[in-house]
Image (cartoon, one colour):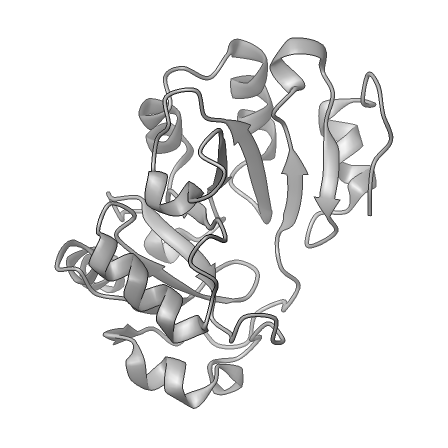
Length: 205
């Protein structure tokens, strides 16, 4: 029922406040300008700041991005689902409302979230806080105006509270190079165990 209500709200152009596998987040239809503008307004997020696109299963993500090379697809299979956001090359300019000022890069999330595994649509997703504010571990930690402004609120209890690790895979297909752009739920050492050492450059905290 939860997944059905979530998907229905997204399809109707609403904004959902929900518990991800890391922190509380906001979600909307990534192809609806009105919905995206509403989500950004709730957060006070700058209109040109990119957001991630979230799929609720790895097969759905891979099917939506057929242009990804074999090396990147293998990395996705090893890392997802889980608490990571992957920065991928976006040569076809998919999801422009999420990519905003950086159309050549797509941020991808596939959470480990069994309760929403049946959601059949992708969403634009961002943390449920005011821009620059602390991440919400509990529903009560989400600012009141954001809770009140969402069309559907799903309480998932207390979450780990550490945001996703952001990993840049834009050069990975070509030369195996990757970097951790933001430390988070998955330790950089664990990323290295999965992907192997970067072929050049250093990991950034």
